Length: 309
Image (cartoon, rainbow, N blue to C red):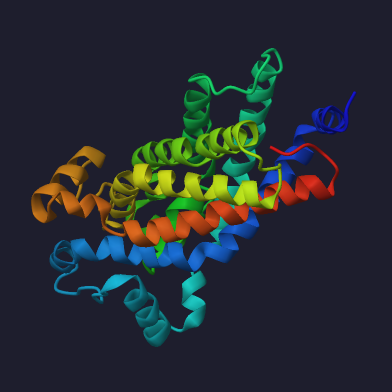
């Protein structure tokens, strides 16, 4: 048995809880480092509906920002630098849940199939499994514990609204607001992130002189971040607007009835370009998030003496 096979054997014997913790740690590091970019992206995406919110709120509107840098500077100037991490706690909770689940499940399924294959090829089932596990993650992670929605509270907190007001305005149903577009967005993002990284990394190892090191991991994560942002931004815009909209006492959205309704109203009112509002900060957030996560994840595995992803 060579060294690589020995490392794979060691990792395969680890309990799932340990593998889960490894993935969760890497995800938490990536979330803390890149969260200000996510908040900036959210503020940019919701300002397009300012006119509708102004009418629904009886004349009160939101501060208008221009561009990613202008948004960040405006938040720091008007609300203080710590506001750039507003909502980071539920965001970390969310990633602990579904980043851990999707990584453990995906890798176990991948290795069980590839272990029977002579090469390290990329069958289409990988994309389906990757999308499935990423899509299922937000369903588990959306409301984290009673009264605190991990994804709902995360998005709402970025817009200045916390879980207690969400419950008081729309009941506990409000904590699940936007779960459908959240799953749709997550599935698309995962096709671009997890499966692209997996594919590009092993392609580079098979077809270039690159070794299984940080340079290879960085190149693969750069590609995965770009593809994830391209595929996920339209669904992310819809998800953000649905989760941020005001709700009635029954938890129903006032501005949009569904993700399809939000999509049609956004395109009709602001054009197709509205679906890529915030693409730059989305990409500038996904790229460093993906790189931070994968480099951290791979380095932790290396330090622990087990095989790379």
